[in-house]
Amino acid sequence: YANSAAEDPMRIPSIGRAGIREATYKYLTTAPEAECTQASLIMAGGACALYLYMLGNQVLGVLDAKDGPFIYNRFLELSKLDALWAAFVMKECFLISVPVYYILAACLLAVVAILVGPILIAYHTFAIKGKPSAEKAFRKAVYGDILPAVKSQVILFASLMLNLSTSWRVICIAEQIYNKKVNASVKDFEFTLTTVANLMFTLVLLMMLGHQDEEE
Figure 1 (cartoon, helix red, strand yellow):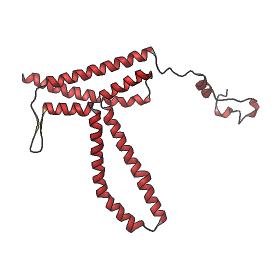
Figure 2 (tube, rainbow, N blue to C red; figure 1 turned 135 degrees about the horizontal axis):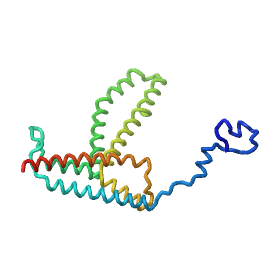
Figure 3 (spheres, helix red, strand yellow; figure 1 turned 90 degrees about the vertical axis):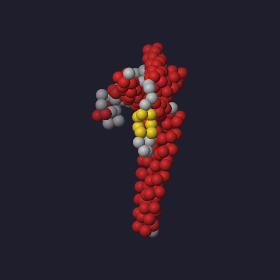
Figure 4 (cartoon, one colour; figure 1 turned 45 degrees about the vertical axis):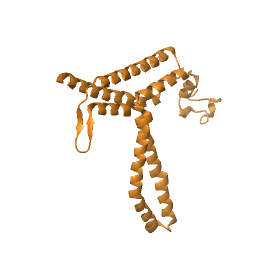
């Protein structure tokens, strides 16, 4: 093999044979890492069990919490238990939280379309209509840049909502174990959100239970 691109046989025919760079040779001759090993299976199973244990403790913590006023004003009345259960459901029940997010996003986009749409129509009608190059640039900006960017952002935030759920993480780990593909990969970094969401919810729960013990 050649040590660098400068020694490529296509550039230096004097090598007299086909050659590849050293990095390419090592890549081709290195056996791929196994997708499933006994250690990775044990780690995945342990992680799944810990997630379930955490969920159980969170539910027990909410059940042990005493009710009391949390938000009370002329616009909203919310007790502590209502707030805890609402946060837990939105965090864990992705079959509820993700559709609710899409509904809210659709409503918001509808409002934006109602406000911005007439302006764009007026601009197209009175400013650039009859100018082929300007119309082409306008369509490219709207359909090629703005709408795809909005769509990608909506999907991104939906993915964030989904990965807040510990139950979703447990389902993903169970699927990886079933398919025997449990080695960590780059895609697993998105589940850091699961850890952050659990830490925040647990801290809020501990603070409420701590205040409850002080009051007693």
